[in-house]
Image 1 (cartoon, rainbow, N blue to C red):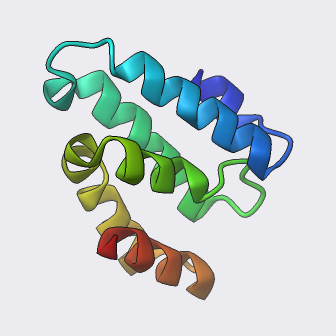
Image 2 (cartoon, rainbow, N blue to C red):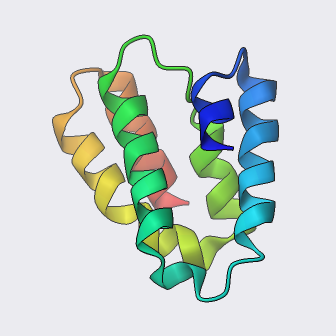
Length: 102
């Protein structure tokens, strides 16, 4: 499903794939402890914050925060803090901080 997110055509497509991923993650027991899930979202944040032509949209992180806040707290804080510090784009820095503040 993450491949679909990284090749999405627009924000609506990206959000649909994001919700599908979250729905699949709800079926995983102890999802907060899964290193694979942490890696998926860490790579998503890195791609979103470092690549100029990324297909990943902020809605991926917004959806996770809104639908699974306990998982978001575990998997997004560190990568978003890194993005807020190291991204070259001011917009990405401000979006990272906005998502962290939700």
